[in-house]
Length: 326
Image (cartoon, rainbow, N blue to C red; front, top):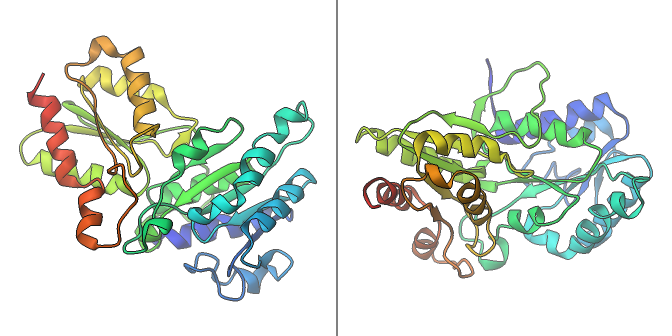
């Protein structure tokens, strides 16, 4: 099977869906003439033309609103934010228009739109360009929120998201666009709301999603050197969350550590902790541990960035805590 980059997997997903359905179009800053800020849409303008690959002004509220209006009138827009930090400018259209339209119209209007772009830390970009909003959007009824961790999942989930009848938030990472993995040339779809067990284990369950899956898998590899068997679950979707897969894993391993690049208050880790203690409390042999960012804006200094973010060392330490301290 061929190996392709994360950005290429996204491009294939969008291009295949645009060939399949003439209602699909891409709109955002630098997606056309510049081939995308991260070259995700490279070559798409040449194939589909300026009516379907549309450069916008630096006006997120405006082009997000155009996308919502287009979706309610039968088109299927893909709205790219150069970073989800900029989606805050457009959050009214996402939260108060796209997410609410189906409910407020008593089911008369669907909003089949995908908002996509990078999320989280990408190096020394400062506090305003390094934030995670997965839990913000996941808190909103009417939205679906996907955070893939590898090219295979990215392509299958994005194709599913584009075909979905309701608004989907699709969150990537600048630090993953060059990552490679095996991706089939033939068409495939991945259902929304279905977690994936990336690694089977018996001693502890590690749950994560997005680029922090690298931390989770790295910790599992380190623990294997000490004959500790970790099961690693990639949520892939944080709304809806596949609670059942997590609960069944905890019933087997009896321990849970959640690793997430986000502030701790109201995080996805907090939500999973509540759900597991409610439905699998009697199976837990130790308190659930979570590793989040420190509760501060992300600094610029690289040493402080590494101190604040989840990493393999912190994850291994947390796992040993649940294994050896009751």
